[in-house]
Each structure stands twice: as structure tokens, then as C-alpha cells.
Amino acid sequence: MGQPQPTNRTPQPDRGRIPASFRDPSGFVYERDGRLLRQINDSFAERWSAFEQSALRRELTGDRLLIEHQPAPLELAWDEHAAAVIEPERVELITYPWEWSFSQLRDAALLTLEAQERAAAAGFTLRDASAFNVQFLRGKPILIDSLSFEPATPEEPWLPYREFCEQFVAPLALMAYRDARLGLLMRPMPSGIPLDLASALLPARTRLSTGISAHIHLHARAQQRPISLESATRARAPRVSSLGRRALVDHLRRTVEGMRKPRTSTPWASYETTSTYSPAAADAKLRLVGELLQQTPGRWVWDVGANRGWFSLRAAELGRQVVALDSDAGAVDMFYRQLQSAGDERVLPLVMDIANPTPGVGWALEDYRSLIDRCNADVILALALIHHLAIGRNIPLDRISALFARLGEWLIIEWVPKTDPMVAAMLAHREDVFGGYDEAAFKQAFESDFSFERSEPIPDSDRVLHLLRRRRSLTH
Figure 1 (cartoon, one colour):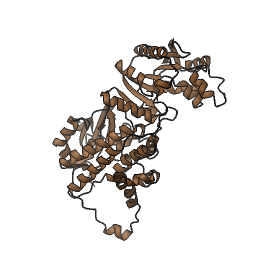
Figure 2 (cartoon, helix red, strand yellow):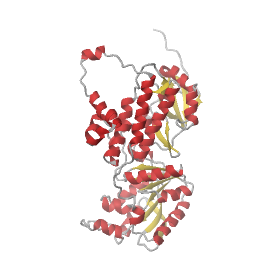
Figure 3 (cartoon, helix red, strand yellow):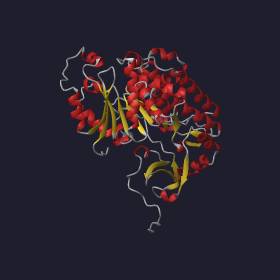
Figure 4 (cartoon, helix red, strand yellow):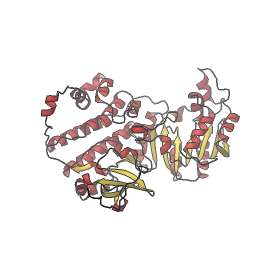
């Protein structure tokens, strides 16, 4: 047996590989020396070369449907199976479909279909249609998987059809026709919502919709047909013309466009008119939050419990990049559509319950990282939130402090005492077992993790804004 030939590309330990990309045999993503890289494997070399040199690739990147990438030296390859290495444009914050509102998921679906339509016109096709191939960059959805494109095979059906239905059509239909919160079903089922489950959950009236009936109800029934070993052996892949593929994608697009935002009532969307702030207090709070933000360094602000995003926008006006988190899917959707109408690229709204944030999900709990692991915040805003956590969710003050200390170095937090009308309303129909909920206990709990840098009472209110700085450096 001959000796193996030497190579200048030594296989690396798994540390540095992005866990979620291990399933793709065409290539994978990894980090080296602070650079985000992607290896294209030998097995995909010919198809990659065709796409890389095509006018389609230049069109998609030029129109911001697909992220840019730069070629990288082959010496940076992960192992000896590399045909090429690229350095993709980095998305600083990766988010997941269950963290998006209805309109965000709908925009991601329409982006995917537009990319397929353009690919088909150029003789290419998407070989997968995963919602995880889309991220939000500068306020807009964009495809991040350059290896998803390959030359189309004549008379081959559109192979990602089922994946698209399970990861886009099913959750969108459930959100539109049942409840906006059903988008969260993607968290325990990241491969997509099974079509038989979606069919069972949807109201009977959706069977009268041509699109929902075809792509969910009838599609689910077709999947459940038993297939014998003999018929499977003799089965041939269906033959579909390019016109047929385009017709399918066009029908999917019209189905997605026809689904309107959910009518689910949103308890916090009218907060600006139902809150207990007087006009003077509301104006003072907005001014004071701006002053406190100007005392903090860094670029990223995470607004936890952002509601409709008034303070997120204030942070953005001060030049910050903002992530606006709220558990109210309706409020998040309204804020997202407001930002899209204004063309505002500085704020990314997400559906997130900070008392039950995204954990590690997927294989070995590593495919999709937890919210805490992804947090890149320099400053945390926690305005009109602490009473909802401490009283509404029974979370002790010291645990609230510990979580915020994990999320960011700087914290702007609003103390809401029991004398506040909102707290009084929360306690009106439950036993007050929160004897330790007072300002002295709040300061004692938070002083273990933070130093109090500045405190500002909100005029015409019992509430107080505090600027805190974490006492020690923490690793996630």
C-alpha cells in the first residue's frame, strides 16, 4: 500500500466549525482567526463554478437578494476535500424563523420564491428552500446560502417543494388563520411543521382556499398514501417541464401573498394610549432614556420588552443598531411593518419572551444557538418590564439581575414600585406574595452584579430610571 501524499491543508479540530452547517455535503461554514469562511467541497465544484461565473449570481447579489462573498485562498480550507474557499459577508446577529413575526416570515418566503423564479429564468434552481437560509440584514431579508443554487436538470420537479411548504406555507397559514403565536411551533420542530399536523390544526374554511388546499391539505394527504416495496422499486421520479415548475412557484407565491396578517388581538399594541404615563411623564421618560443612552459606549442596544419600539427608535436616532424584543407577536409585527414602510434599517424587531427565550435547539442542542449565546448587546434597555418579570412571572429580583448581567455590560432599567397603577392592577386579582418587591430589595439584588451609575426619577410618576454598569466581565 502506498504512502499518502502530503498536503498543505491539514484537517482542523471541530472547534471553529459552525454546528448548523454540518449537514450540507456541498460545503460548510467555519471561523478562523476572526474570519468567517465557507469551504466548497470537491463534490460540488462543477456546480459551484457554474453558479459563481453566472450572471444570475451577480444579479442576485447586486439586488441584495443574496449576500456577497469574496474568494479566499485555498490554503485557508478546512481539509483536503476543498475545491474552493469563500469569505461570505457576515451577518452579525443570526435569528431563527420562530423569532420572526408573521410579516417577517412572509417576506422571507417571498424572497425565496423570487430567488427561485430568477434562478429558473437563468437555467438554475434552488436545491433547498429552508427558512434558515434567510437572515435579516439592515432591516431586510436576504439569502445567506450561496451553495443553494445549481444548474437545473430538465424535467426534474422542484425538489424543495415539501420543505418550502413545511417551513413557510404551514407556519404562515397557522399564523394567519389561527393565531400569530403559532409561529413558535417552529422552535420544537425546526425541520418544519408536518403538513398533516398543519392540516389538522387549520380551520375547515381553509379547504376552500385553492392555495392552502393544494399546498397543505392535499399535499398532506398525498404524503400519507402507503407505498409498497414493489411500487417503490418500480417508481420513477415524476417528469415536470420547466413551465410546470414555474407554474408551481408562481402558485406558491400567490398563495403566500394572499395570506394576510393575523387578526389576533395584541394586548400591548395600544400601550401608548392605555399606559398610566401622563403626557409630561412620557415626554420626560423619552428624554431621560436618550440622555442615559448617550452616557453608554458601544454600537448594539437590545430593547427587552420593546412593545411598539418607541425607545428602540430613540436609540437608533442616536446611531445605535437595535434589536427590539417583545413577546407580543402582534406588536412586533406592527413595528416591523412600520419600519419597512419607513425604510428604516437600524432596528430588528423579534418575537421573544425574555422569561422563556430561545434555548439551544437541534442536534446536540447546537444547530440553533440560544438567545443568550447569540447576544451581542452593549446596552440593555429594560423599560416598564421589571414588574412583569418579578410579579407577573414570579422571577426573583436577583435572578433578573443575573440574566441582564449575562446579556450586556450596561443596563438602563426602569423601577416600577407597588404604588404604580399598573402594579396595583396586576395584584388586584391575586394574592400579594411579593413582600420583597420594593426599591431597597431591588437595589440590593442588582448591586451584586452592577454598580448604579445614575438614577433619574420620572417626573409626574413614582417610577425611576437607573443606569447600571456590570461589575465584572462575564463569559456566556
